[in-house]
Amino acid sequence: MNSLAYIKSVYKPFRITKNKNVTIVESTEGKFVLKKENKDLYTLFNYLEKRGFTSFPKLVKNFRDEDNLFEYVNEDVIFNEQKLMDLSDVLSSLHNKTVYFKETNIDSFKEIYENIDNNIKYLSNYYNTIFLKNLNEEYQSPSNYLYSRNYFKLREALNFCKNELDNWYSLVSEKEKVRVSVVHNNLAMDHFIENRDNSVLVSWDNYKIDTPVLDFVNLYHNEYLNYDFSSFLENYLNTFELLEEEKKLLFILISLPKFDIIEGTEFEKTKKIHENILYLYKTEKLIRPYYMDNDNN
Image (cartoon, rainbow, N blue to C red):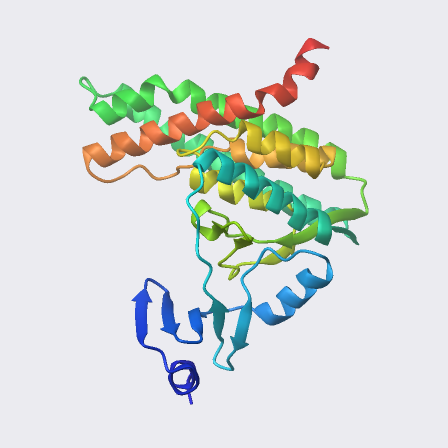
């Protein structure tokens, strides 16, 4: 008996609704969400609960075919800025309650260094190629003109990342342990549900044990256009203090330009370039306060 047949037999639902990758089940027993998962969430949620973290939906049943049945969580209307700050509290709580040190070696840090360094080199060559091509155009299109005017910002961001990457590697080159925690690894505002009784993170499909900075990077990439993250980051760092090398890695990862292929209609290309140049300016403004002390020394 598959999961949906089991639910129909046991809960006698009066309404079943497909919504993207989930199935909403409404019955006299309550309202539930059926979703296919690729991870063992039963084990994860048990571990989180033992660590004192309960901001996840109640798992009603785990099926052998990897479907999970959750209690449906209703969401109250909350101001976006307040919801973002509440998410900062929940995220810092997740990391605080699951963080630990594990042994590592220089090869692990070297792999991270080389991956980021190769990305910087690729982007640098790609952006330079586009810039030189645009210079040869007598009349540049709006997207090419916007790109050319802001090319210096791309170069500036890549130079910053390269310099900070070298500094980061100097910090970690002799370390034998690294901090890791449970990382949700799929953060977006749509995956955070709040009501007067509880605040929960949903969509744990991609969770893993890794550096906690990944959660902020994912959330920032998904939501940078919609929110100002300065208060979020300040609150997060006050409640979950990052180590110097962790903070440096975080700022490198969010400072890397987001786009590597510029294609589509003229409108689509212009929009994409505009959004990603805006990303660089917003990121610079976000992390600037954390470098001011160094600038004044």
